[in-house]
Length: 404
Image (cartoon, rainbow, N blue to C red; front, side, top):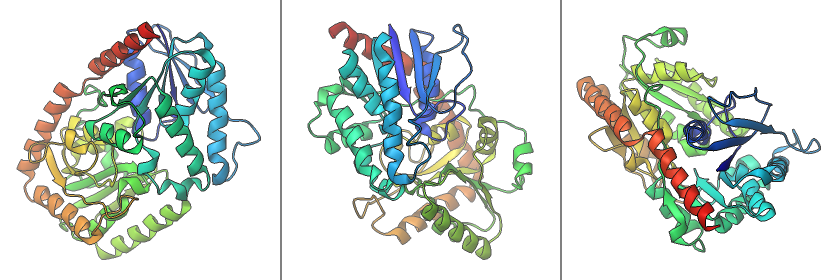
């Protein structure tokens, strides 16, 4: 079977969980069938056909490239056209995120092949994207809705995401929506005892620290974490590994919040660059606790990464996170009540204090944090294998192509 994975992100241009997902899914699927990855960005080096998938990079129409945010969605759609145009030799296409969903939909219509969509997030659940995309948010929503409603199968990365798909798109047949979790490579994500990365960025290995890793976007809840940090035990360091802001506005907001926090307390470190995987792994493995304050998270693959590195997790009880982080066993969950359509907390002050309270519980009891970290590592190894996820995905492909 010839499968095309359609994605915006693919190594080395990966900045979010969807890109991580496609990287590992492609690697494992390529051991089972013929896989070509169609991605955005700079041309990739020719792959060794015996060691992984073929990779084809696509660029936007020159007239649209580099334009303002209102045309960014049109730029994306121009890439989708080129992806669809070269999909004629495939037996099935599998798209990831709205950036590539429309390419899969057009390939289905043009070449008469099945289209599978994996939903890593949903545009109706992220209205703050209008701040980033301007009028392009209507286009991103159109691409996603059209593609999901017409897809032959929809893969949700958690049961929570499946519920969101059926709520946001009630015309979708529930029988077409399948849950296949994200995975983790526990050979790559495991504790690294070296401390060179910590020392390079000014993190004291002898002091406890709370770690955040993520993009600067409304979804990840970084503003709420900064509010929570005002109540964090002064003995703990706070390390923010945060970059790639969605907009200038949120970048300025985080700058202001970080400056004010730094005036209030010491031990606050902001690593602004997007670090390489081995650097992130070292930071994860030495953290006393990893924090995920997201206000929307279909699964939260970064929580799996922390767990695989043997680190306890404090995370918001939203979306698919409770399916990964077992409250009281692999970490602590923070109650969350959305107060509006943008998923902002109904009581931001209470939410921030709840985050701080749970972080302080584990900072004050490192032995308990260690036990949770050990349990998280065990859960990641036993429940979230990429090889099993790839086999489940391929079985879905085979059912669809057999009935096509």
